[in-house]
Image 1 (cartoon, rainbow, N blue to C red):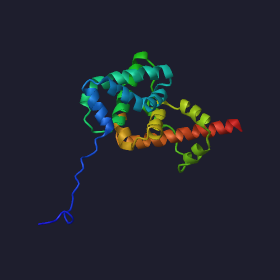
Image 2 (cartoon, helix red, strand yellow):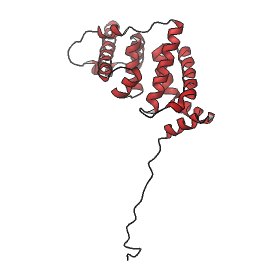
Image 3 (cartoon, rainbow, N blue to C red):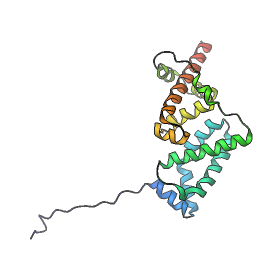
Image 4 (cartoon, one colour):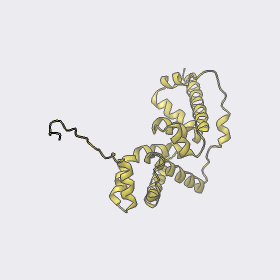
Length: 198
């Protein structure tokens, strides 16, 4: 028989529930406060993403509202195969494309994305580091929407290649190629603007 001093105590901890998944579960049960919590958590990154995708603050706000309605209707269908953020961005993207299609605003032709010529090893990192914030924002606005989108997903929303592939509905290899081409196009714009300003 063991005495109390020599007995080992084994602590069993329950897995920590994902708070964002818990919010979706509450939304699925009809909790309006949970929808407000989700909005508070993701409003800023979703709005930034949508502004870059649509190019218009008003359209982005409209699409964000449509996204929340879609989340309200489909929260019970979240299967957990991605993060909540990735799932939300996917919904926002579909809503934006539907809105832009209805308004007949042009989306970038994916074939355009492959025409930027490669110019040696990746010096775009140095060009990006030198660019001032306003200059970078102006250059981003000049990019094709699909280039802007992949850059925002990667560098603003911090999505992995796998998450971006899920959001965009393309293979990871395509995401890597698109991101490389987008960085190259951005570098070219920044170098061009540096040449004009000097």
